[in-house]
Structure formats: structure tokens, C-alpha cells
Length: 208
Image (cartoon, rainbow, N blue to C red; front, side):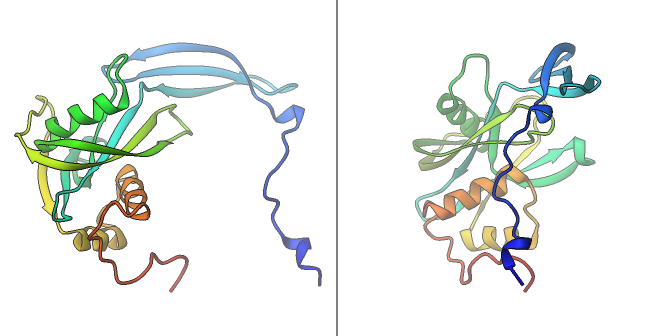
């Protein structure tokens, strides 16, 4: 048997009838942090279709690491998921014209009460490209000192300083289930920026 017969292609070349064309975009709701649009798009030879799009200014997420290797985590009450208290890394939305580095410094102080002298970028990623254009810029924050929280009126945030081993165990068990937090922690670990992660086994892939 020729094994190549069952190999999946690494890429698929676009064809003319697979290219969508944007026809229009209509604002239906202007929110405090993001807007909701209805976009009309069409493939050549097909009927127009509508898609809801959240237009987002962008955001940041940061892994704050103390000198002894402990990680500053937060617990946030998230009403869209039934008011659950989720384990997360500090994050926030860019203000108009704001650069990610300025935003991450501001959000770190507001949410955790820690100020950082050093921010190491981990790159950016789309959070949910099926419904929003939000780009999230990830960082690791080090050289921390405590200055006190400055929460907004609608924020419910608890700060928890955890050993890196416990954070790793929470990732493996699924206790940490916030996507941006999982990705930021994993990128920080890959770069060796969580020095005392101390995991005794590699990340499992597939079934045991």
C-alpha cells in the first residue's frame, strides 16, 4: 500500500470560487470596549451571506513572575459564563491610540497591584477569529514591586500568588481553562521565562 495515498495535504491552494468578497459592513451596536457589526460577504456566483463581527481595538495579557519564581494569578468573575470565578493572567483592552506596552503596564497595576520594571514580549495572537478581529499581545512581567490595586468599579478580581508547580498542575487538570491564560503560560514556559516551573514530565500529547 502506498502510504502517500492517505497523507493529508499540508496546504490547499485557493481557487477563484473560494474567495469571499466583502460587500458591506453595518454597525448595529457601539459598546464601551468593542462594537458589533453585521458584515455582508459573497463568494463569486453565490448569494450574499451575513456574518456578525465584533470589532475590537486589541488587548494584552501578561504573566507576572516574582523574583522567587512564583506567578501572580488573578481570579475573575465572568458573567458571560454564568458568573464563574476563573483563574486567569492579568489582561486588558487597549484604549484608543494606546500601544500594547503602555496598556500592559497600566493593566498590571490596576488588576494585580504590581508594577514591573521589565516586560518581555511573547508575540500576539487572534483570540477568536471566527467572530472578532481582536489581537492579543502577550508579555511576561518581571522585576515586580507591589504598589496596590486600582480596580475599576465593575471589576471583581482576587489576586493569588502561586508556586509555578501548582500553576502547571492546574493547567494539566483543566482548572485553568481561560484560553489566553493557557497560551500565555505555555509560551512563557517554552521561552524559559517561568524559571521555576519545575514540571517533572513533558506536556502530554494525545491519549496516555
